Length: 159
Figure 1 (cartoon, rainbow, N blue to C red):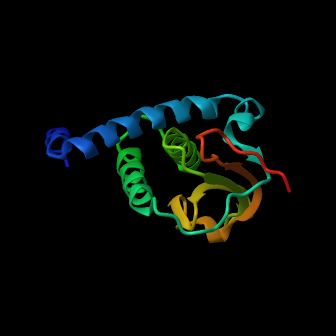
Figure 2 (cartoon, rainbow, N blue to C red):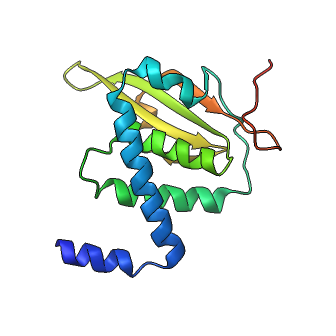
């Protein structure tokens, strides 16, 4: 498909989806910038280390599906690589903006050549926004949870 078709298709979207796609593009750009930084610098902004949000169904599933679709569509059309970690961070930041809990997972595995590979995915409630198609092949080595209380502040994990 040539560039003109993409542009035509983009502007044929309804205003809500058009704005969501533009927001997605900006968050993917921001996430791409973040992954260039040392991980120790960005890890605190990802939430509580080695914690998870509950695996309970929530009423926001239509919003989650819409965000997931926008992330998958837009990540194919960025001028930079928008692979799993970039998509997961962008999705988490978009959920933060909407005060929706999420957990970002980091996993490792070995490929067919025995080389170490990594993957990242994001879950909110029972819904996986990014990376679900590959996650079962990986062992979780890190997770970061963001919870919000009823007043919209990031919640604590008193366990």
